[in-house]
Length: 265
Ligand code: MLY
Image (cartoon, rainbow, N blue to C red; front, side):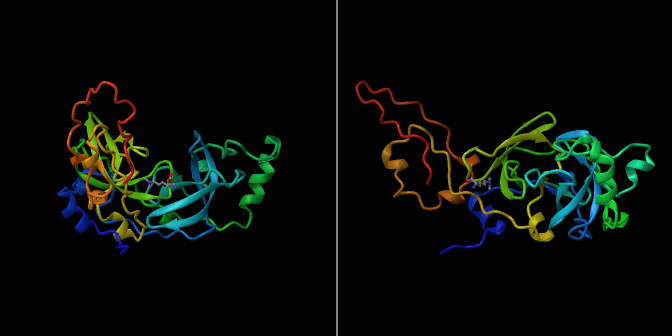
């Protein structure tokens, strides 16, 4: 029976602890999302960070916005929190004596940018200043420890937030491991990244939370009896972090190509 994902049960099953909320650069009380579809704002171009561009709200999910730069195509949407310092009300750029820039990959001739800008802004619904929330401060230090659980943006599929585990901590950086995905989506980031959230964030902000994947990287040389798919039952609920270390490779003359690859269970 397909059950819905529950952190409570999952934490019990894995015997893992959530990273304390104080570790994250996120408000203790998540901000409200007061944006509406179609509203326009200013945003730093993710592909050219010194440029400030016009963006349109294409989607609203929890405390996040799906944004598209005006004049860009529909394949470069990006997501920002309502309290991100990457976004600001229309007029901010000009007030600071700067100029709004066409996005990287502007789909028209550069000479048509001034007119495009006028047209895209005329009659547009601008997001009110009150919708932009102040970015929380960085926690004073990296408080994460290996094995702690969290919710993290899948940077390859940034609309997704998924259960994850701290794999390593090195200075100001942490290694975020996606539970059940065999390392394919893991990444290093700063401890104060805006892409990571305490356990329960999605639930309290009404953002969907992906269930963990059902793959576990099995030690490469486990005997067939152990790695057989008939045996394990609760593998999918096991924290990759708690798997036993790799046993030494068996050296067997004449029996080659028998070493099973890491298997998806
Ligand atoms: N269809 C994609 C989705 C993978 C999502 C992984 N995240 C949740 C860690 C794939 O299978 O590659």
